[in-house]
Amino acid sequence: MNAQSTAVGWAVVGTGTVSHAVASDLRHVEGARRAAVWSRDVRKAHAFAQQQQFDRAYVSFDQLIAAPDVDIVYLATPHATHTPFALAALDAGKHVLVEKPIGVDAAEARTIARAARANKRFAMEGMWMRFSPAYIALRAEVASGALGDISSVRATFGLPFGAKDSPAWSADRGSSTLLDQAIYTVTLARDILGEPAGIVSNATTREDGVDLSLHATLLFDGGRFAQLAASMVTYIDPTASISGTNGWATLAAPFWATDRFRRHSGDFGDAFDAPVDRVFPQEGHGYVPMLRAVQVAVTAGLTEHPLHPLTDSIAVMDVLDRIRSSWLPATSI
Ligand SMILES: NC(=O)C1=CN([C@@H]2O[C@H](COP(=O)(O)OP(=O)(O)OC[C@H]3O[C@@H](n4cnc5c(N)ncnc54)[C@H](OP(=O)(O)O)[C@@H]3O)[C@@H](O)[C@H]2O)C=CC1
Ligand SMILES: O=C1CO[C@H](CO)[C@@H](O)[C@@H]1O
Image (tube, rainbow, N blue to C red):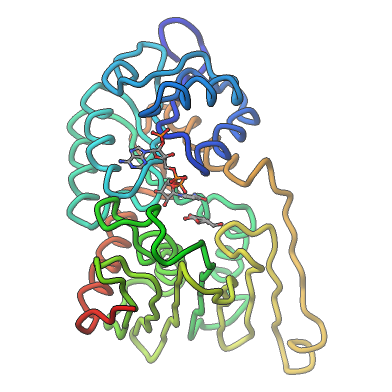
């Protein structure tokens, strides 16, 4: 792929939670070379490179994106930093896989899409749920009519991540349960029901504006609806279900990274007494299908992935913007 080898060189930017999981999953991707890692802290960069077996460690982002053996830059940093890092990497001629959310709003997502087009480079948001075998199979069952005409979706993702005043969540980093958790619920609702015609929502926000919990009802043509909720301070059942005229199906927790769903369908007897379980093998921490798909697309010269094109990231960000702008004046805690 790059001048020095036929392997595809990956760089990981940031050394936090998801960087470790993804770096470890890269070992399962045939032809992926763990080329470089970047951190603001030299010790962390070297420790990560050693632990995850990356060739080199950088504290200069400019040097990392100038490295000839780096093909794909995976960005796993705070939300507010995604766009500047992505633009710099694209302008340096690198392909980018940007952790979700691609930016903090739809305007940023559009800016990244323009830069990817201008540089003729691959860009994608790391919406791994869309590459999960269980999720793909459920979408196929829905499309084939197994649940009849779809009438509603419920998707909720609340986990108490820590203290409400944790410095890990800050407005200047773009911390937000809308961007961090609700993005999965909106992605699922759009995948099944399309673009919402109306939105009813409210959120609980911290004084600095960080939204901590929210609920939203998305309204669609024909009375269809999606009930969504997200939180970073309390549990909210981390499952999702899709219902229609012939039954319902539930993605097991955590629905955004699940290996299974249960379908209840048919007449009342079958729906209640004869559910069908579908279970799929999970590779690594669950990121492998997405990483492999990105690498295959880049190797094939694609600039977007058909399973998660930039137009979809932009459309989801548009819905997130609409949800945010529908909130009543901030309710601080
Ligand atoms: N797909 C998934 O399953 C998951 C996705 N995510 C997404 O991944 C991204 C990162 O999340 P997560 O790994 O949980 O976050 P962490 O806080 O654990 O790690 C973020 C890393 O970004 C680096 N960083 C760069 N610039 C800054 C800055 N200005 N302030 C703070 N850190 C900075 C830090 O690395 P260093 O100190 O080395 O510079 C830090 O370790 C987010 O977009 C999040 O939504 C998160 C979890 C799971
Ligand atoms: O995207 C994500 C997936 O799930 C994690 C929790 O398990 C979240 O923290 C994260 O933001």
